[in-house]
Image (cartoon, rainbow, N blue to C red; front, side, top):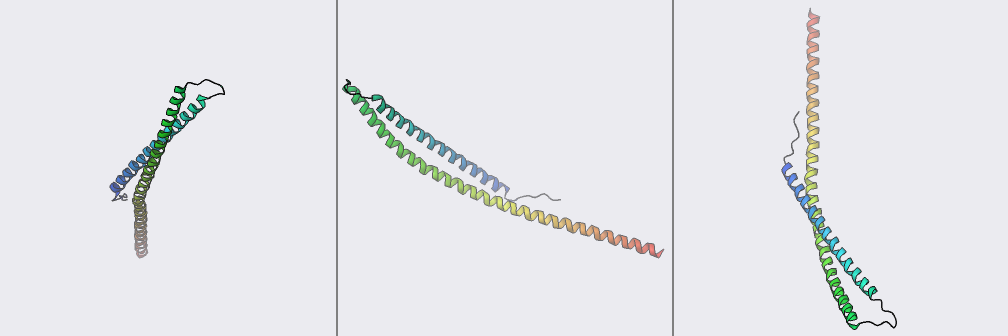
Length: 156
């Protein structure tokens, strides 16, 4: 019996490779997004801890330079936090783009896979028909031989 050979196997292989590359790019982009979100969370935590760390009590003597230093530090952190939020928004856009590219590549390879499945199904059906036809011919040949043997035995 013949073996099934898909003529577009190399195309399918190539499209699966492109799908894997797109998936990897999406995962990398997702990882970058998560790292940037973690960085933002760290900065916000630092800003909050500096505010709590100042802890000014009534009647306490505070060095004006310390207050000025802490104030400048908090302003810088606030500025960096706003920049990081913009960076995160840009990374979200990039990640969505990578996801849509991966989705498109999956669809492309899925089309070829469906075609392969369809052709394989047709090949199996055709093979089964040919096999049945061959078995029918064997059966008919057997019956013809049995009849001829029966006729020859009747003549004797």
